[in-house]
Image (tube, rainbow, N blue to C red; front, top):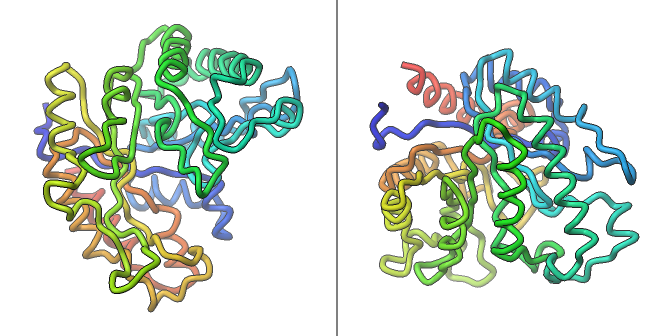
Length: 326
């Protein structure tokens, strides 16, 4: 068995993010698999894509990504639910929320029709995807206890609703693949990871070390440099181990987080990420001894090479994943 001190590496990938950056999503994913050597992917099933109209689910939008992963013998962590990777985070089909509006910040539990449709979608989606050997684990919802209300609609998912969703996914998968639940702890006082751990087979964290702040003299905030106030990743990993469960990192910052949106950034003004910072982030993550680490920002590496001629991130990624293959 591979030592915990050498976590398995992967990337989180969103075809919607690649398209937003003006890239060709299938080419970006194939480049990651073929040229970079990625063999572990975190993908999302976007509810609004697979439910184009009432009463109909269409899983074809998922199949190109799964076929590519299978072609290169990669393995997929598939995120399912109403929350998925990237802004706006919540992806209900518009026809559903047009008929059943959900106020900003509302508890989804208080909207039973929406919950019923969510559960039905999860059951059918999981049953369909269960036949794909390329899928090795499910992530049920993305950061379910982190609504991020200031940037999105900020709907709330209760522990009870999440547990019900997980039960549906488990019942629909005859192989009983492990279920991952992730969180983004803000400080040591953030205890929302505890219900995540209780519900899941794998507890995961999302780790960002350079967040922009509005007030000087600081340009960025590193929550993981707050000493005893910092999120206790190692403690969470130990708590998971005591329960016979694993600890992963599903998003490790490897792209900028600035006040301006990525396409508008002047590369010379980026201070939140660099190849050296990515290495430092990997060292930080490694101290928690996670079994897996998925890097966040693979689409941007390609963007930097194509649009700005900056190949440093591509070369670093190749180095990391080639070392992984040894």
